[in-house]
Amino acid sequence: MIQIECRNERFSYDMYHIVKSFFPDASISQISDPEQESLIHIRIAGDSCFCYPKFVIYEEEIAGLMDKREQKRYINRKLYRMLSGLTGQEHAWGDMTGVRPTKMVMEKLEEGKSDQEIIKFMKDTYEVSKKKARLGIEIAKREKAQLEKLDYENGYSLYIGIPFCPTTCSYCSFTSYPIARWEKRVDAYVDALLKEMSGIAKMSGGKKLNTIYMGGGTPTTLSAAQLERILSHLEENFPFDDLKEFTVEAGRPDSITQEKLTVLRRHPVDRISINPQTMQQRTLDAIGRRHTVEDVRKVFHLARELGFENINMDLIAGLPGEHPKDMEDTLRQIEELSPDSLTVHALAMKHGSRLTREKNQRRMEGNTEDKTENAQMARELEKMIDTAAEHAHKMGLVPYYLYRQKNIAGNFENVGYAKVDKAGIYNILIMEERQSIVAVGAGATTKIVLSEEIDAPGSRNGRKTNLIRIENVKGVEEYISRIDEMIERKGEWLWR
Image 1 (cartoon, rainbow, N blue to C red):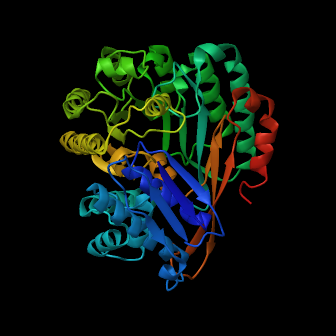
Image 2 (image 1 turned 180 degrees about the vertical axis):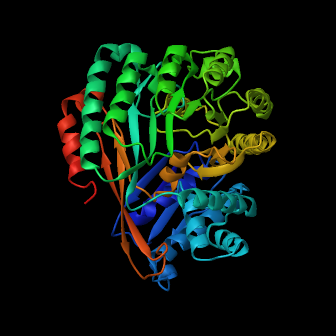
């Protein structure tokens, strides 16, 4: 049991996630008390044979640090070092809690910092290893080259959310609904989606549409006719003159047919994603994926035969019951298929997923992993991630984007690898937040980038950016009934 007490709530988020990265199975409570004597007080209760030290910070300790960011960095670094010494663990990304570490690297590159200066900054400030700092620099440079092709001021991207799946995978916490239960309402959902798209098209006259990403969920759970409706509506209502990329996340092989792929080929879809997550059949069965390894191969070859020249595949390292030898075998099979890009995720125990619920249940029953088991899991996950990087290199794929998730064992990362000319532009945009992304569909979040000229430290190329988030309702029925409200909310902010 771990209790985090903070006088100021602005420290709570980082404290929680740093502690959680070292004690993933711990029950953590948080208390905010403006009257308490110390600024931060963390109590860690062990078993009867071991007493963990307390972590206490008093106001006087950070009084000399006027900048709020520096105060947080000091506290985070001190907590990380204490927990690292206590557990004997060192995390590759140190005490970083953000999901976009390359944004910080990008800022340093734009300030004119050298690679060595950036590596030193990442080590001194966040305890980031040299290996991960170099990876961040390599990716940030590739991202920068891609982003320079885009028009931030007049360009935008469009995300289309399809919240249906064949089944819900055990590791997933995204907004998705089993298609079999919602089949009678899908046409009504598509009607609402097209209405929202029409509204966006009217609002965006004169703007340049740079990328389109249809995700979910699993877009190919829709019928061929429903996909045709959406894609035809897009072409009829949006200008494609400046379109640089159009991705459809085909995703689950058990949702893909030749008829659906043929529909995609009739339209300017130039990138698709076929996501096995693993090529181990026992794991696919365990996580609730109703397809076989052979299905993955058949669908991939079918897509190639139909002319798709940019196919991504997703894998997850650390799925339940898998070890480095399983990841090695999966990568060998992926190498035989030779995709144009490969995204490797480190398993995150997401709040709301079936895996997390099952783990919490085991913890309530007293069946928890000890420190040794957690450290072993982190070491195996690191080996899987390193093996994936080696195989990607053998396939001629280079890392081009990176992000992190909360609750990854060992505080690792997700990396996208691609052939030099096949990097996913939308993936870079969603990470770097340089261009507005307008999102339609249930549970979709629009991110509007507002920027202004500024002459101040920390600004990017003399510009300060702010992000406005507009979230659509998650429920399918609620989205259908409130579609006019979703359109109106965007109209209050879009392009103003």
